[in-house]
Length: 116
Image 1 (cartoon, helix red, strand yellow):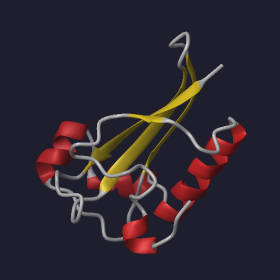
Image 2 (spheres, rainbow, N blue to C red):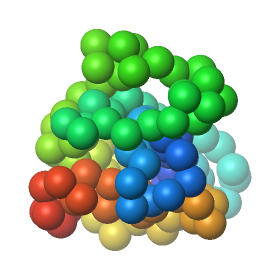
Image 3 (cartoon, rainbow, N blue to C red):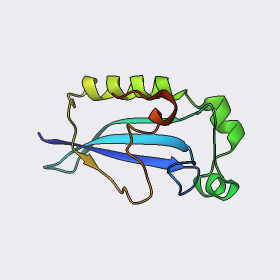
């Protein structure tokens, strides 16, 4: 089976230099059958959360919900690494739309400057 990692992020706006990534979701897909496998999803509580109200509305989120339920970026990076290793994805093939979204592994690096 050949695996593809499909990643989706919701952002606090369209500027990747200033707007926070609010959530990240991933699903592993079998590239031969299209069958969906294991999933990962979390809200991300960045220390300097930046989101415009319209983006929050479009994504069905509130700052309060993100602060209450979101994980710190360093924990999200660790959890993503664990998820990928658990499912044999050391160098995953990514499928997604990148025109307005940053790399899924890059989002916490604005503050942490770490690589996975």
